[in-house]
Image (cartoon, rainbow, N blue to C red; front, side, top):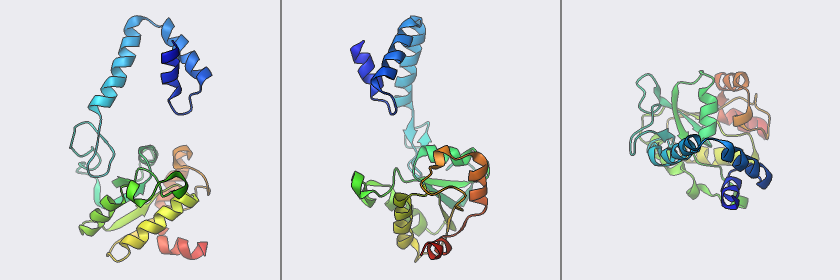
Length: 202
């Protein structure tokens, strides 16, 4: 039981007390349900892969995700997000129909996250390929998020690409994951050139 509690406690947001409650709950369940739970976790790890193009989740190793391979998507627009959770949040608005690029984090020297730890080079390669017309910066409105947007913008401004940022309907310091769908949808619809945002910030 102690080993099981320790494993549950490794999950984000789960402390020892919550982990103990979960373990006790699992012990009350029929064996087939517990086995199904364990099998689902193993299947999640073995059958889910990452898209080589945008780093979203994919069902097949080495294959593009359903968004990148979708024939009805706008493959000339890239929405840059920090994580898969942010991608899901934006997709739930049904207002965006382009591609995504997941960075895997933001630049944060305090946490040891520099540009080399993120998928920034992949994004630059996409832009340099000449097929991209617009890059939408949809990172969390925090100091780290703005720093990352500034860094990326400096890397791609020489390309003939429109760089926009989602409107600040999202409060500074907030997170996309917890923003309601209406606010996210409006922020996407009223996005503006990134240069305009930088001028107002100054």
